[in-house]
Amino acid sequence: MSEEMRMMYWNGPGMSWGYGLMILNMVLFWGLVIAVVVLLFRYLTRRTGPQGAAGTAVPAAEDVLAQRYARGEIDAEEYHARLQTLRGARPPGD
Image (tube, rainbow, N blue to C red; front, side):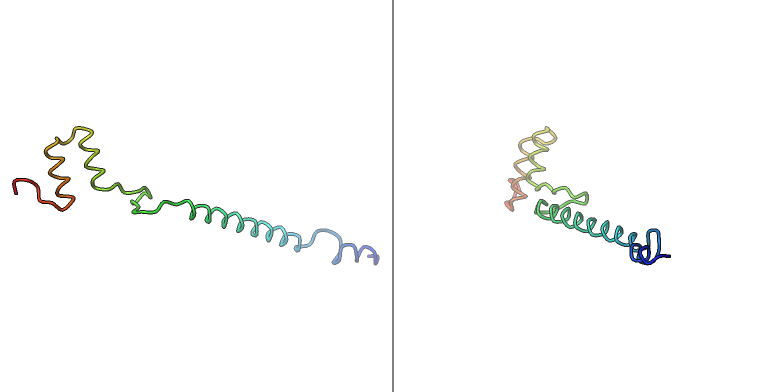
């Protein structure tokens, strides 16, 4: 092998394993950069407050009671009695 070929290819003709390592390092680097950006974005945009098992916000008890009243599941008397109970007052008649 001529001196020119040896200097041109360092260890001989063909691609060496060093090129593969450079590609692997580049993929790992950019994967890490993208993962950090995604995690930072998710951290900054997450909602605060109580979370349910599926990651959704847990509605307040008064909100659930109001929804039940709006759907007609309970009447006005029961709504007001339960609302007073939730707020710490004793329901009328007790």
